[in-house]
Every structure is written in structure tokens, then in C-alpha cells.
Length: 465
Length: 111
Image (cartoon, rainbow over all chains, first blue to last red; front, side, top):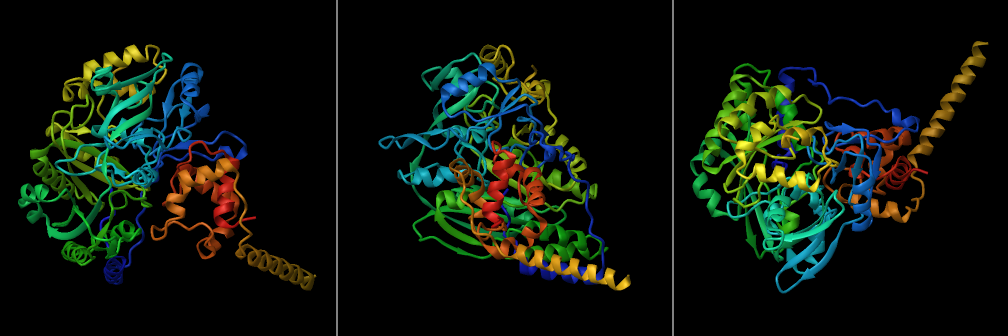
């Protein structure tokens, strides 16, 4: 979730004006399920995901320093053994009362193939550190997601993606990998060697084993220029077929309860790095304040809100690709994302917005809309289908249940595939028809982890174990 | 009796003011262990060494002055459980309570 170019100055001015008209108590919804801090008495530390919604108290937290150590742990550690990545997944992929695996000790670049612009990278590498590390070798990943906390292993295991009709998810950049299985093997695979494993393990949910290394197909380092612009949502949707092709990367944010969108176009550039316009880290929190205030002004709140959004500024940045594409974010949220067939995207989005409006859901968090190229990865959301990914968010300290429950059936209607790392309610029976190779993935998982040492309750549900 | 009580209150207030004043002064930066130096680079630095994203910056006294007044235990609870923009465990899943205390002291200038 990129922070829309919201200017603190303009939003504050609007919020103060609205607040002067109507003094309101701050509305706060319930926080996520709390864990009492019994660990302060010397107990083991709890684990929570980035948003704080998922949590567990694992018996063991393990940090292998080598592949042989990892294989030993997979054979003997308390089950379920779950690779935790950086804990950014919103879904229940990680929680375990057995063992959590952290691959911080398996991070960095293992080897570089300069001739083929490939690099073998340890799975525990954080995306934020990987960009500069690859750049030191003259290489860059073709695309990246917005948030850079994730480990490479976690991002690829869930088919994490950026945007661009000609750009695939991170999984599609993998040309080979090594995976440690609970059977005690370290298997190498690529398109010609262990090909079935290769097609499955590029989006594996950590269910086939623990991927230790990825061979990435990169490109020479390049610079990007990102420009944001406020538009009428109608205008954005009317020009979508043109605009999505016109830039290397294109995405937009639709704002619930307003006919406005923030369009973001990114293209290659030779320009020296520069930055203009504000990118306020508190912009989303200010947006919430402005929304809470204006929605209490009957008849005039929505036009005021709409007008203030349009005045909240734009931004333009240029720089090395990894610096433009991916960032730290300090507004935490929970998220649901479904990828629908590319051509169905706008209609699905409009139905989501209409539902929010009709049910008067108090949601202001912008809805992110991105295009992703199709691929051949068995459980990728983009398997043999170019996708339009629609991401709905709610602030981490607010209840998302009513919102997500209201919009999820709309995604189903458009044959949406849920992001594996984000919140959804589908089980294996509902997921299998969405993925032509679902049964093959299940069979491969049974052969690689016959005793279910990697299976936690969430995996059991989504994979039908 | 009343004068004695007043004197005690004044003494307590003076001690409190002294303590609060002491809290405002950052301690000399502690040295991190090798493992925690790696954890800092891997998990903490992306926010706490990067200006402009809203996180308090390591070693910048103004960013930590008010936070230091909350005390190390409170900062630790916020770190472990997540607080506002701070993600749980600071995304350092392998860090122990002792590791987190050391990292907080390092960033906040706590003794």
C-alpha cells in the first residue's frame, strides 16, 4: 500500500475547518485481539504479524545459520514448523504453537551471473536491503512491491507483486530455487530440472518445504520517475485501457465516498534523482481525521471531503528503481486483496465502491488497484490470467470485519483469487476451482511433507489437509 | 505536622524534577553486540535510520526525549506488541527480550 500523496498542510486545514463547524469526539473502534503481556514476567515472547492481528506463542523460535542446520531443524523441531518471513502476511500462514523459523541468517547474495544478469539470493534477504545489494553488481529486479519489510522468501511464497501490465509478480522473476524439505532433502529445481516442483515452489505458502535460495532473472540497474495526479474516478476508468499501456507501471487509488482517484504512473528515466511534493508519513491518519469530521456534516460533508482530497497535493520522484518502487511504511493496516480477470477489474471496483456507499460503511482508506502480468506458477493469483488486483484496507486499530465481509462476496462473483498473504475466508473447496493445478499442488505437498510437519490450521484449511 | 508534610511533598517534587531532568539527557550511546548490530541493520535501520517517514531516528535526542520519560519497560512493551507505526518485535522475530532492551537503549540513548 503506497501512501497516497496527501499533503498534511491541506488536509489539516480542511480538518480544522470541518472541526470548527462541528466538535466531535474521536471515534475509535476496538483494537485487534489483545495478548496480555505475561512475557514481562519472564515468559517467552509472543509473535505478532506486522498489523498485530495474527499472533501466537511458539514453543521455539529458530534461526538456522546454514542449509544443513535448517534440514536438521525441519526433521526434529516441534511441529508445526512455520517459516515466518518478516511477519508481513495478514493471513494465518505463520502462527504456530510449535516452531517459527526465521531466515535472517540466510540473507544476502549467494552468487552473481553477470553474463545472464542473474543472481542467486538467500531467501531471508529483506527486500529493502536487496535493491542496494543487487545494484552493487549492476543488477536490479524488474519490479517490486510497495512495502520493503518483507523477506524475499515470504514475498515469493505468496506471489507478492507490484503493478504493470507487462510486469509479473516476484514469483515470475525466479528462474531456479533450492528448497529444504521435511523429508531431509535439499532439492534444486528450475524449468528443466524438477520442473513440477519449480512450478509449484514459486508460490508455495511455505507448505512444500523451506526455500533457501532463489535464482532471480534481473535486468541492468535503471532509474524510474513516478508521478501522481488527482483525477475524477470516472475519467480514470474511462482512460484505463490507454493509461495502463502508456506507462511501464500504472496504478490508481479509488477513494470510498468520493468521486476522485489518485493515479500513479511510473516510467524509466535518465534524470538525476529528485523529489518534489510531499509524501507525508501521517497522511493516511490525517485522511481518517478529515473523513471522520466531514461525514458528520449532512449534505455538505461529501463535497467538502472530495474537494479537499483534490487539493491535497501531488508528488514526483525520480531515482534508482528500488528506491522509487519500494518503501518503509509506518501506517499499519489490515488488508484483503483479490485479483480478478484484468478486464473485469473496473466493474468489480465500481461494485465495491457502490456497496461501501449503500451500506454507509465508514471507510476512508484508499482502495489500491494494480495490473499484473500472467504467469505459469501453479498457485499464483496470476496463473494463466492477467490480473487486476483490488486491495481493500482498514487501519490496524479499527475493526475491519464488517467491511471485508461486505466486499468479499463481490470478489467471488468476479472469480477473484485471494492474495495468499492477505485476509480472506476461502477454504480448499472454494479455492480448488480457481486454480487448474490445485490438485497437483496438493499431491506434491503430500509427497514432500508426508507427516504434515509444516501444516498449521490455516494451511490445513486453504490446502484441504 | 502540616509543615513536615509540605516539606516531604516539596522534596518529592524536587526529586521528580531532578529525575525528569536526568531523563531528558541522553546517555552516551551503548555498544551493540555483533548479533544485535546485525539485527539493527536487518530490522531496525530501515525506519530508524531513514529520515522523513515518521519513526524516531537513532541517536536524535529530540525524537526520543519524550519517549525516554516513559521508561524502558514501556518502550519494550510497545516494541514487542506493536504500537502505532511500530510493528511488533520491530520485525526482528529472533530477538529476545534482552536483545530488544539493548536495541531500544541504543536507539533511544538510554543508559
